[in-house]
Image 1 (cartoon, one colour):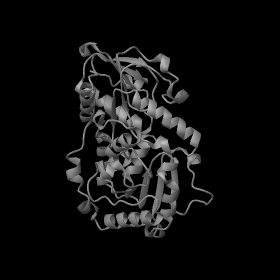
Image 2: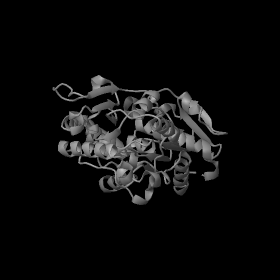
Image 3: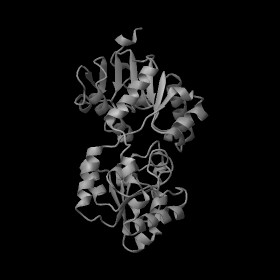
Image 4: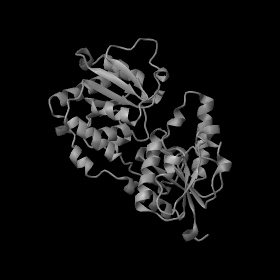
Length: 354
């Protein structure tokens, strides 16, 4: 088939759904900026159609991309010659496809049968893809080691941050004094490690002197912290909309990312972009893409986490955090949505899908 005549389908149904939703939003905005051509179909909610570029066609779809193990809308896919899926959970089909494997967290599901089913689904998704994308070298390396994927077939994308939201938060922080609050942002799931975080916070000097820990990321009932009551100073803010999250970040002294594993760790990059000090477990947004000097801790050690929180607060209180963490140099090399879209289009062309 002549690649010049190929129609590409972008599976944008993930828009608004967590980290993959942020990735999809950035990709859509980037494609709208670089305008890759008029032979594209954007398949997803109405909001996805509003970000189209000239000539791209929007086909509405309100079915969740996770329904029926990802197969609920397999027979509803619009016609196309190639497909770009922003997540490894995707409909089974025979069209040439590019698949983004954002993380391998699904392989840590606590139920052995579910874990085995997810591993099989991932293996099928990977083996049937014409090319793969991911957002961290660590995920790329694991795909090579665990699934035998040819490293040359994997493109590592540099995930951009919402610069406008970061600017708004930074402007608010410049004219106010942050509260004595450490903020944690992340879905209330086991790999986010909230139980250890709460125990660690309770043992900090920061907590002993009136500091608070605010948890953002889901309904309070979904947070499993064990049988003990919340320690003093811990507040569960639950799921927040975009404006509420900006409010929480604008008022925080620092952000802590305690995750046991992440594909990227977007809240870290979002906080740093907005000028919020960070301490984190070794997630890719710190170890692979972050500025040097961010205080990093072992997420399996409550003591190490507590020490890192106190260290970060001490650096902030002494106005020395940004002496240690070179945010200015880091910001000068941050990608934009157009950068992300350019990487994706180049990867598709290298795979001869466009």
